[in-house]
Image (cartoon, rainbow, N blue to C red):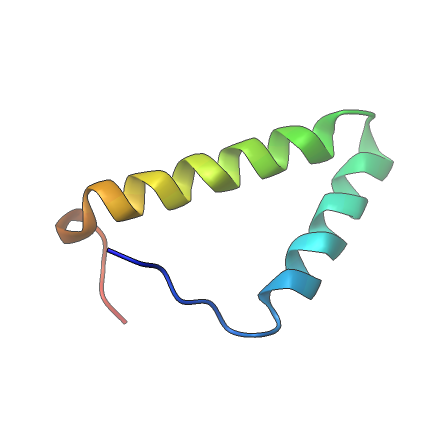
Length: 52
């Protein structure tokens, strides 16, 4: 399964990363790690996620 994202997602992820980094050093990296883990889970088990 391949995920397809809205073109604005890059801007949103970047803004979120920056916000988390401002809260605590390294928190932005934690955010990206969790995001990547979620993407992997969705692609590995697509039938367990709601379809929009």
